[in-house]
Amino acid sequence: MSAIAKLFRRKQPTSSQVAKERLQLVLIHDRVKLSPDMLERIKDDLVASISKYLDIDREGLQITLTQNKRLIVDMPLRERSARRRSG
Amino acid sequence: MPGKVITITSGKGGVGKTTVTANLGMALAQHGQRVAVVDADIGLRNLDVVMGLENRIVYDLVDVVEGVCRLRQALIRDRRVNELYLLPAAQTRDKTAVSPADMIQVCEQLRREFDYALIDSPAGIEQGFQNAVAGADEVIIVTTPEVSAVRDADRIIGLIEAQEKGPGSLIINRLKPEMVRRGDMLSTEDVVEILAIKLLGIVPEDEAIVISTNRGTPIVLDGRSPAAQALDNIARRIMGEDIPMYQPAREEGFFSRLARMVRGGE
Image (cartoon, rainbow over all chains, first blue to last red; front, side):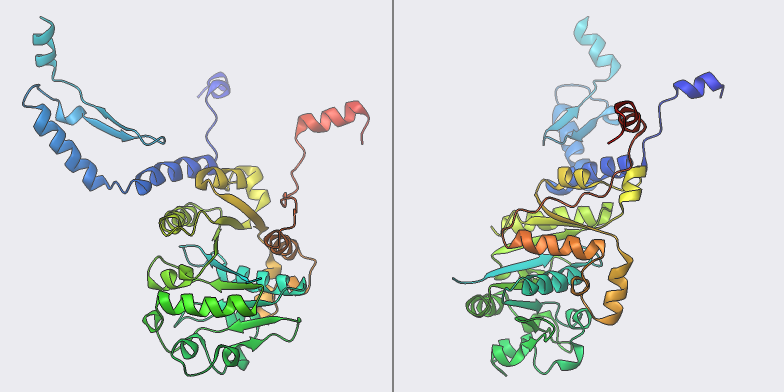
């Protein structure tokens, strides 16, 4: 890496910043008692029900629990079905 | 006026509950309060050795609960201060020997006899912990600035709130100011932000604690070390005094040093 690139490279987070972020993430899940396994089951159920109407991309489906206790579901449609709808 | 029962707990083991209990009990007694410290860790008793009273145990908490002796007979007087007593845990029994209802009854008696009863809770969230908080008026949560300890503290805070004993107050133990300064340890602000409960005090890491535990002499008895002062401050806050929070000495940054030089020093 050149000296200039080094100069502009973002500073590495300190280990305490890493600790804080990891803690905040793990506590979000602890607090609502949401295990990774439950998250997978929710995904399956969502795909099963929405798939009756739309062609869902299961691989691209993302569920995130935010710090202010919101469950955000990002559910991409398959390319094919999206085009069909607009056309 | 009836006394106050305060349970000291943490979730995670090894964060310093017993040391904190012994020292807060001793410090409160030094300030003229009548104090009982209770070891609720049945089967793994330790408060007696931390206080240096292990050779004087005759009866224990389970004996009191089972009616083998009266509460007064089981209390060991600490002769180094005026009014400090230890109610030891049983070593040869397990936590099922005592129920939350038993503890509520013992706490009721303690409230009549003492200004403060401090209960040293076992680690974990199971029956031993449930027993320890059953009779509490207030709960103090001890944590260290580490991911695992803070996570467990969060769990404990949730449980205490569910039992309407909450929200409790927080002691951050074994803080290393130098590591916080380098960005290699969670700071007081980080921990308080994450756990969102009232901060009762900060105890810096201090080798003198190890030495005092070796000797069975709670550190507040010899006074001057940083941890002893921090613990004494916490005891006084418990008594309702308004004591400013311990602030680890911050190294001066470049700009403030420059500013001071420009201003001609102070």
